[in-house]
Amino acid sequence: MLDAGCGPGGCFPYLVKAVGDTGQVFGVEISPEVAINARKKIAAQKWRNVEVVVCDAETVALSGVFHGIVFFGAPDCYASSRILDNLLPHLADRGRVAIFGAKLSRQGTVQVLNPLFSKLFSYATFEQRLHWNTNRGIFWKSGWASSR
Image (cartoon, rainbow, N blue to C red):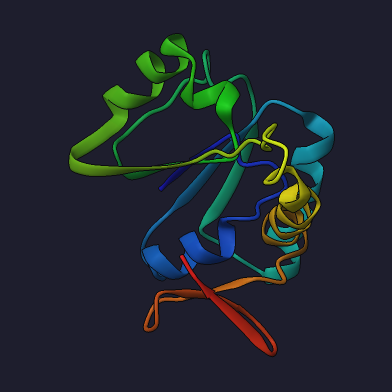
């Protein structure tokens, strides 16, 4: 699995679970400071099959083939044709691409939900307090759930 624009590794727990003990997770992060936090997460979890490189996704030199590419909250990656031209040739036949991007609303009545959405996105990405329950298809935190 390739995590393009991996940030501090918010997707790593899910990707590690998806690839199992024999698979690999490879993160690409442009910010050295953010990559430090991703590497701390890798060390704390003692994952041997996760690696992060500090590089621009447009120029990262990849080898091999990935069965999936994740762009989680990385519009600078998935909106760039040069980055896609660099990464997509490394996607396996029948490989999958998962993209999540969001933006806050500018519509009056919906704008009131922006602080809630920002907090949920922050929890899911940086604090790992939301979990995906694959059996029920929901995000959960102690005491509440919402469907995807």
